[in-house]
Image (tube, rainbow, N blue to C red):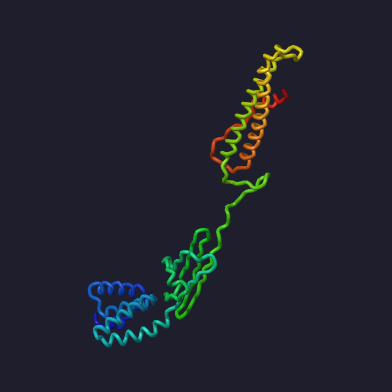
Length: 280
């Protein structure tokens, strides 16, 4: 391909430029010369790919100097000086909350070595994104023109805390499990059942003592029944108090917990438990 053949043709459409660029890259893959590299850079420049064009012009200049292609070297130097002034710069800075954020420009992650430094970029729209755990994602688009410099400071806002619904009894956790309430309520039910059993034993002991101790005058042989009756009364009262408190506490936990897919457990006091409270 003769030197600067592209400059002698009218490549006015982007489609023609893209086709020419693809053909030139195919030629360069077989044999790269200063002339081919120059024409690749020329197509990129006309397509607005100024950063890529700058790199290929510099490669063409290096190859031209190595091969003593003076005409190519002179032409490249003339275009390089003008191109460096045209390329816009984009500076990305870290602001509040973005100290450890992952930052990307146009979908490509950028390293810390270029953060805060002017980055050569092509004219047109660009998007800066950032994300970090515990913070809302950052996204900002900007359009830069030739010779323009633009700075974007990334600031991240913390994610809001999970929503909490308020019920009649105060704060209510929507995600809290009802299982602890069911467990405590179940313990209460079991305790009420035990209370009923001991109250039954107490009643039986009183009946036996009424028969053995007419007019409340008991023989020494009945002392063991008296002691047993006292023990039944104490245990019955304690288990009754524990059962009532556990059932009430479990019910409160169930009512103040959020919706749950856990199976329901019916809580009911033992029959007759509350009516057996008394003194021996």
